[in-house]
Length: 380
Image (cartoon, rainbow, N blue to C red; front, side):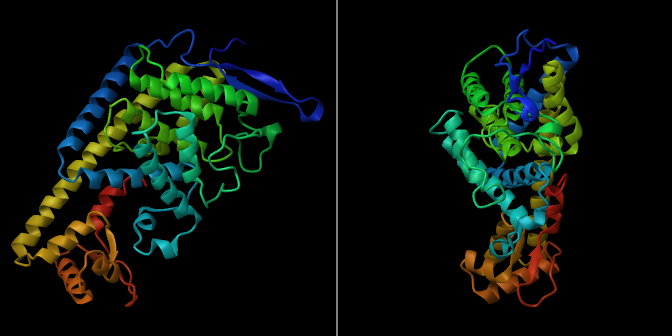
């Protein structure tokens, strides 16, 4: 059957024989055709991204919001891959002591995002950047034995746990074809064409997931590529879009749409799904900014009206917006306060209902800015 998305190659012979998929280079031929529905999705996605970018350029604590977005995207993207971690785990003040492999996955994704976004100032989106980012993503975590920072030299496959090449759901290109496909993809990413950038990045994400160039971490790197492309093409200036929110919520459809491109060359269905993901994720980020801003203003007003206003309470309150779960000892150390001052200030915030105590042990008690976490918790 003729399929514009690619073809299957026969590998090996006898009982070892299997077929791997070779994706056709981008852009698709025949070219993408957008119907009225697709154009509507495209207009809405671009509009919502524009609103999000406009809002983030105006909020005073944009760096803070960006760091929260990166954490949320890291958590959601890792959860798509089965990582069992929560928002509370990511903000645990004793994270260095309490880190398990699941939490380490998320922390590495945060580090990989920070690294890749900064590296964009020096490199285009290229295979070198992708490999360097991958090395950070799976450093000292599960998959560490799977050649961090290197494209694979062996065949991989996608299937349920314990599946083999014989019963795999999908077999990506063999290593030789994979190298050629990644070289083609690198060229396509850095070639200008007439496609809207949102359609182009939808194609890039599909192609990367189809090539599956690493032995582990392909899904997370593929989703991070979306963020990098949007920044490089100035659709957003900072990584404020947590697209994995939508992809996790619609995980089955996400994988089905990718499969349908490989099976029938149905790029258009995938593009429609992707545009909805961008649109809804941007809307959610806009709502989150509004809620966090409102919460900030309400609590500043509450502090001012309580008569407890002091430089220390404002200092700790601002600190809470970067670390919504705290303990007194670390808070005191990080803010250059005495333990007693930090303890008294935390008690004031408890009395005002801004903080709640989250652990009962007298030593290492932790306190949570719960209303703030509740806003960020959506979808996680």
